[in-house]
Image (tube, rainbow, N blue to C red; front, side):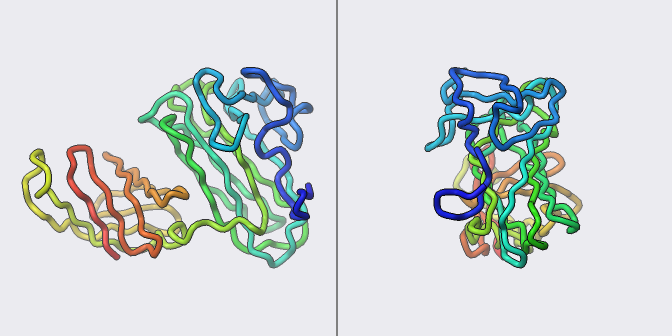
Length: 266
């Protein structure tokens, strides 16, 4: 689709077509631009405010990827020139729990190049805006963008994974912090400012955040992701931390549940 600026763009990325009152499981043909693998061939559209769930600022509607079961929403985007750098962005939100996340896998298929894939996990606490750089466009053919529901916090395959604000083109560029995450961080904890800790400043070794979104710290393994607010979430095997990364990627900082200050320095 060609937008008003002349740039090629995702069609109906805000799921504003069709306009709905409250909620509707709309037949695929009514939802401009999108296809679904849902068995009932419906795409569930919510109006902002329905069931006390508001759309992100600037949006009026959003889709629930899990309409009647686990499914995939997809769209082909044409017009990105071969050799140009491109990326995508979207808003994602869980439905069921502010502490347990819904998971969605995003796949970008670009000709005969290996598909780009990544899983994003988000709770119902708030919408998260993810901005991702895919790389160099392979040929002049269309790009297929897919959103596949992986899991829901509810355990119900028909409840979870809200989605809106989808974009994919050569203008999408993530904040500098997104590209600067990978590396080794010297980890320390400062318990001197909380009465619940041991009152000490401790060095905890090196945590490594890899380009493939895996993480390691001593014998622990985990998975990390970052949003456009430079918040880095690290899901370790037995714990979870949310830290803020400086734009230059040199310092991670945050607090744990008892108020301990956690710092990672490159």
